[in-house]
Amino acid sequence: MDIKTIFGLPAHPLFVHVPVVLIPLVALGAIAMVLSARVRERLGWTVLGLAIVAGLSTQLAVSSGKGLQHSVANSASLRHHIRIAESIRPLALLLFVVALVVMLADRRGRGAWPYAGRPRATTGTPVRALLVVATVVVAVGTNIRLFQIGDSGAKATWERTRIGAASPGPSPGDQRR
Image (cartoon, rainbow, N blue to C red):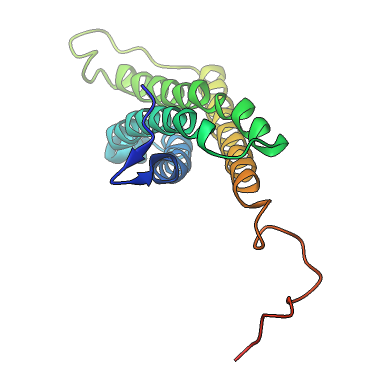
């Protein structure tokens, strides 16, 4: 399903802003969750909910980008953007999975839902350390890729405009008032 427009406007620039905001928030939330039981208790389910919305909005952004692809001028920057943009979907999913594992490990250790009535299982220091490392690596890696995708999309959009072109100074028609 390629969504091209919303209310007559290109859908892609509208959709991309949701994951651009939510993915960094989910990454920060996941890191805070893995480091603090208090954060897990207070914000864990919210972070997971935001991760789901981020994943769905990522899908909409990629789909709407495919719909827009044939309506814009082809360039090396656009091809690069298209090539790397697909990589954000599995990374957003992986970020959700890591946050979910952190939350479930905590719930299991406390004997809370969905592990209520079962014996508590404590995670040892090596497992906790692995969860911290995995969460930080996935969170940082996902955000680095998100930045690269956004940067390549901005370059593809603006490189052939007067705004995007490198200019030594103001053009003759520009006057400061």
